[in-house]
Length: 349
Image 1 (tube, one colour):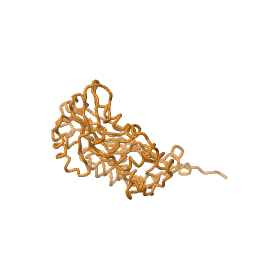
Image 2 (cartoon, rainbow, N blue to C red; image 1 turned 135 degrees about the vertical axis):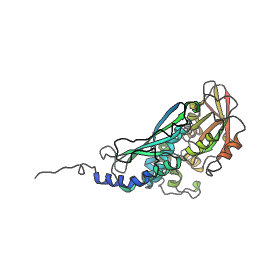
Image 3 (cartoon, helix red, strand yellow; image 1 turned 60 degrees about the vertical axis):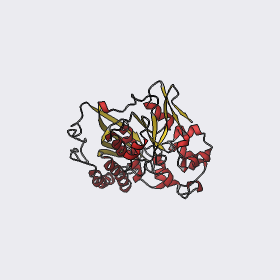
Image 4 (tube, rainbow, N blue to C red; image 1 turned 120 degrees about the vertical axis):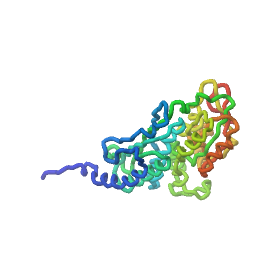
């Protein structure tokens, strides 16, 4: 007897992949403008820069890549995938928006054990919605079914963003000086960071189920608390820059929290003080801290603790920033701290 072997018997279903692509097309297309010259299926994505470069004297291309990390594990546990696509765009695009860049194009990589068209469509729908909201073209990506690489019910998503900025409008923190103020903009929760510690505390140590509703979360399920989508800061940041406010530096608070991310834009000879009395982190943070008796220093180094973005600008701009961000009702702004002469990175008061 002759054993017939094909790609499907090896674990890769080409037809499922084709079905996933068919489902993607309508979602991806809504992110396209006339600048996008190719559709899905091309060997490479073509994007016309004519309009993007029209008013830029010295164009600088700004690029970044990131993933959603361990949050994918919680997503699989809950069976919710659309927000993961939103998270990916918000995480990557936010990193170049804080440098003053306008994100133009987005590419994704999705690797998984098995292609299930409904799940892939949900992920791409989330990415497409987030890209459309931020004016970014989702120009392509890669969906890789690799059963020998990824375990059952396992997936990984990575995003690649490209933007552009006029060199004279780059925001790199070079003009930050002592006396400037740290203005905070809230997060919506964990965003995409600290999930390795969160999983250890919630599921390994406390042995909770994904749909549990601990009293500390005031009736909110663990799935809802942990999977709250990452705020997309691209449009708010563009509004602030278009308003001409003298923003001297911006920090996207991702992995490493306030402790690691603010110093990335502070030059030598300066340090920042953060007043913890100016805000109250969301209940999910204090609840997790109690589960494992986690030290404050570890919490503020691992999680964003309710602060998703930090602006550094001269004193007296709180009213102007608040006014510009009024069209974004989910955002709150407050004075978080100060820039001082000396060394020490970030100090908490």
